[in-house]
Length: 276
Image (tube, rainbow, N blue to C red; front, side):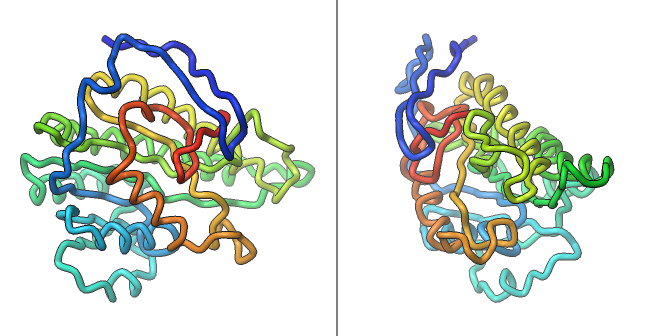
């Protein structure tokens, strides 16, 4: 098996470098430009919707599975006229829904497998640590932003493994992260009342780091990508980037740039390292 020593990160979120040494050669497998199947959670709005549209611009994409909660407004998804798009109801909080979608996707992709799983769905609740204790809200924040992505990954991993076994197959799991989840870069609990959100994203980062190390030997690359502060329900209207501007470099990275050298890292959308 392959064991990666502790990661060494230098620099800040905007640059710097990262390094690890391993007996596993970064060039011992490479991805070809074969057709790819992509699944994105939380696809009905914001970054998820922008990612759906951006992936569909590339003719190498065979299918895009766009999942959403049953209560979500999916008008924007339904306006996309592309036979490669499959809009599917899947609430990441419910295992039975996830399992049904795994079977649906498996029936469509067959032996090709699922090349790219993007764990995107997220919520952000205000939480004032000087205010009332809201245990249930705290648990919901952690369940949506961290635990549910672990569960989704566990259920879909057999399909990703199927893709990894194909010659030149591109197999990766992209976890949409946030620099607010960086422990080293944290500037306190009161900023944006985001203490719970920070905790959930820090847990999500640990999942990326831990499982990402293990999956390398299976030729699967798991990466944590932070899109930057984007104009979404979480990012707010004053955010610097539009969802479309955020989606473009992410899709480019997924289809053209990410390699095993990026496995288990926490990166911005341009693949610059961010401190854990």
